[in-house]
Amino acid sequence: MASASPSWVILYKAPRVSAGGDISLALAAPPLVTRLDIRPGVFPADPVTPSMVRFPCILATDPSGLVLAIASPSKSDRTSSPAYIILDVPSATVSRIPDPKFFSASSVGVIATPGGGYRVVELRMNTDLLCMFCFSLETGGEWVHKSVTNPRPNWLWTFCDVITHDGKLWWVDPAAGILTCDPFADVPEMAYVSLPKGEEHNKTHCGCGYCSKREVASRRRIKLSNGKFRSIKMGCAREGEAPKLTMHTLTDLTTTVEWALEYQVSFDEIWNDDSYKTAGLPVKAPVLALIHPNNPDVVYFFLEEYIFGVDVPARKVVQCAPHELDTPALEGDHPSSQCVLAWELPPTLTTGLLEEGSDDGVKEESQAEKSN
Image (cartoon, rainbow, N blue to C red):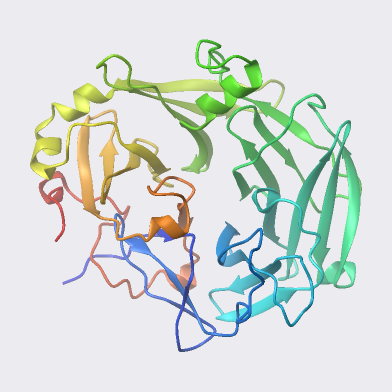
């Protein structure tokens, strides 16, 4: 008898084109990966090649079940701009955003409006000012431009995530911090959230501070878990030493930015645990994948053909399965956190999971062996 459906899935960012309705979703309990199936015709059948966007890709999600995707421009449309597409998964409907103001796919997010619609927001840099391009039916179905002050005008922002949380959008740059604002405000005010103290950069890696921060940022992810922002950083494996995992929690934004240290654990302690040996994983540094959205103690990693979850404070592997991702199409030769996202499902989608899992999506230690 199947147990209760987990409230979230690991969503692969590359949708799959297949016959059927506009949208279909075969939910799989973590650590198995879920993939959206989209009918032919939703994405352009005659994509422009070469293009800045080589294949359809999911950019962002909203807790309501909205998914924002991007696709290559169509030859028949005679435009060089990629297409933004809204996938309303609960209602299985698709909307195409007209005349997108495309600049950077990593700086665009989607947020549900109080009236039941949505707003797509793209953030662009312009030295002292940041430019927000907003699209919604409330704006007449047109793109509206708003200028906001750049809290760090001398920094070259490079975002890897746009997160919807607490009625705001949060642009995450793992090398510098987070920018956040209320996109519905008549005059939006952009706030800056700095990184945890002591996590800036180490100039021994590279010759300049910016490049050094980028190198460290490749091993840091900032995600939501249990309603709070968490920063997880994986140290370098140097001279035979195991990498260390360090997690901080954003605890205060009222007057000053405060991050609290949750744990710092060497991967050597995880490798030496019986659960890791039982899973049969090789003793080598993995790649960060994501943080469990309801339990910040559990972090997921990619290693070779597997994805596995670790209860880091307990030093135990709690889940392990083949990831079965065609990663060369999405992110080089190896999967990473840029291939997947932790998607908390709206209530209308939390029934009918194909695979069994516990309420929080973490299986018992005895089930940590690889799934075949």
